[in-house]
Image (cartoon, rainbow, N blue to C red; front, side, top):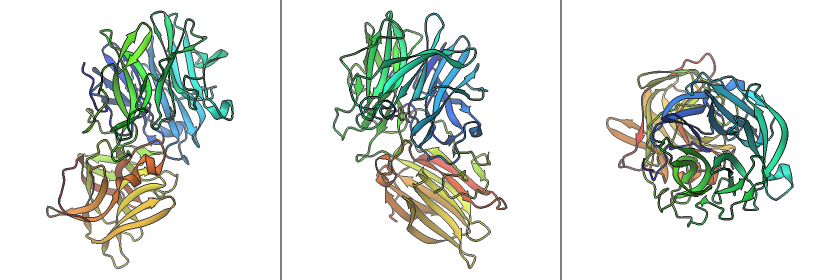
Length: 495
Ligand code: 6LW
């Protein structure tokens, strides 16, 4: 099993968690307000992943309406014990943990149970099954909840898996190795007779790091591994193409190796638009102490897309009524603009490569005022809508609008036809918006990729490329024909 030097799940797939059952590995990642939520990917080599289902097919069960795009479903953990899969996760509101849930299934592809709330406050919940079958629930309390400043803390309670409820006393396990803020992402393992507690520290940006502590009893006391941080790119130059590495989960292969999934970002010109992605890192052991990425260069440099070519079309906060006939997408109209926090008529794909192109043929809506658009969506305060509109006189117009921090900025307009093949193309440094006709592209607008990056726009997600259909219930669905997403090849001409 070779470990690839690029993400194994490209695009916004952060906070990965993995478990193995027989020859299959199963992986879940955070989905925030994307719907359906919590995709389950399956692999036999941890490199090529296949989308097999979603834990949260029904968003109404947890209520994502009204949330900022980067709130919602955070940092799940997947485990398997005695024939049952467990996924625990937090729903965040205003960047703070609001509720913790557990879902179960006998088949990772589903159906999954409805989410069962747990009486737990904290982010990044995890489960650990001890040798005697007891299940321990761990989570992180951030610094603000513990003291005004200083480190946060990791805590544990037992989970009664029959009743799906936390029981017994709470144990405070550890405050981290780096005396900073944000000790999070705890996962417990057993190795060489010791309990191994792995955490993430430093925050999910450039200082992100993996640390560890060990104990002889599951409840502690835990002593810090003085080698911490054990995995980080914080010490590398800001020009290194992979940054923010951390938040790992470990898994043993059937033949006795250990690998970790980690999150990281791919930078271009100091910023990233693809969100935090899932990487795989080899792990050696020094007795019970993990040694991450022994040998150099396993995490980068990184070009090209991830190995997995799975397409997971998502909505935000809700999945609008839509259907596919081959490559033709039929998308119902929705009344909420993309700049609001409501349920909107939008479906998109995680942008998973720097050189990306999305295109589709759209008809001008019949009535005036409504818009159909190809969209590059970071969050409700930062996106570009490349829109096809009808003018008062019945003619069509293409209008490319950047929505930035509460205000629209028109990047370009052009006369349009009744039917237009709209496209967005990016090389990672800029996005260009145009229309294709008779083999040529007419560019209408461009903008620097930085404006859609997490560094500039904030948040925890990456860019979604997709389509929207703004209108009310009486409006007919938009049919977007011959939708194509892929790797962009340089095309001549500037906007
Ligand atoms: C995740 C936590 C984090 O729960 O970001 O800063 C949260 N770190 O580990 C959302 O991905």
